[in-house]
Length: 84
Image 1 (tube, rainbow, N blue to C red):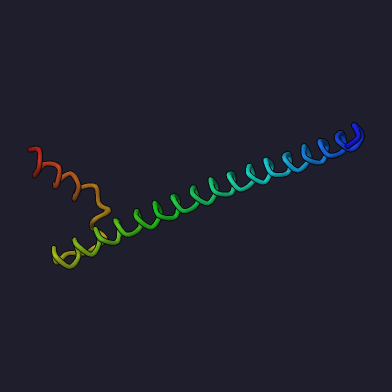
Image 2: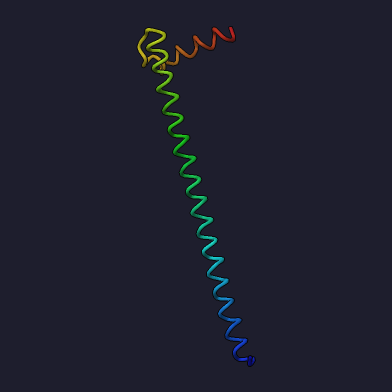
């Protein structure tokens, strides 16, 4: 092989390695975004299910209005029962 052919070959290898590294970066950033979106989705669903569970528990088991869960006096009463 001549030195000209070696130089051309090495340039093409460099450009392909640059393409591979940029593809890896894109894949990595996609994976991070995907992981973050899944985490936020699971967090949001968990919070919603917690609130719905509080309402159902207070309304069905407590035989009261489920919206009273959001009343501050309810939580003050619970706090006083536990720590008072």
